[in-house]
Length: 365
Ligand SMILES: Nc1ncnc2c1ncn2[C@@H]1O[C@H](COP(=O)(O)OP(=O)(O)OP(=O)(O)O)[C@@H](O)[C@H]1O
Image: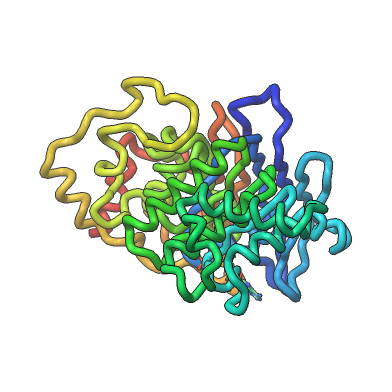
């Protein structure tokens, strides 16, 4: 994926990343960059390979996985590095905000003590100093000092998630990877948590990779969006440009399928509130007639389901579900990502996408 800041070296550079289990490839040749301070949302349906990608970025592939290609964080290559070299980066240069905050916290230790231990695992400091830093870090995420010594089970879900964010940010890492950090929460808490995460990483210039199913999340918090399907990149680019005019039929289908937030409803109106570069005024199309929006809100999800990595069709993996797929090239030749004008797309027929690509999916009603 090409950068908007070509003069700056990327913080994170991923090239031809592949994650396999035996002969089965679940991530199949992914390449992208993340720059310092940037927020990249990685979106796609379940099974697209988002979590495996996230784990590879952190140098934490699951047991049994073989990772090839390159994941460079600054000058450090993570793929093929010994475990000791990878773990040395954890907490200091890369940190994870996991899906399940409970799993990240020990049930038998007080929250402040866990953060203090995390301080001391990286910095040689006194217990007193570590505890003071832990309490300060918790206060920064809205957990008052008098609650810092509670046990995780005494916290609400939202507080636990905030504690995990505080823990991830303790050493101001270069990169935080958040894997659907707030899936289980109600939408308001979820938004608050993502706002907090974006604010905390934004304050320190930490890059953030947000793994999400939720395109709203991407729109509100990310500078760039990377859409995955069946282990491959489908489309990547500045988030507001992708929303305003997706190039891949799959992206258009995903946008059109968001319940109550179809392509029109998501895109028109106020620009996103992400912490990215200022939005150019007037880049968003004017709103379509209300009846069109109502029509789009009834759109079903893209017909069918993504293929399992063990059962990939020949050609483009999305072809069997794609209203634009032809019977020849799309069905026989895998499209490679191509970058034009800062946008990357892997689709043989992206130039033929209609001006209003949601139309493609309207026809499937
Ligand atoms: N440990 C594993 N062993 C074998 N296959 C795995 C393993 N982990 C993941 N996979 C397979 O790899 C594919 C991608 O998984 P991954 O968890 O990265 O998807 P995802 O996009 O994060 O999905 P979700 O949004 O549901 O978390 C899936 O088909 C999954 O079944």
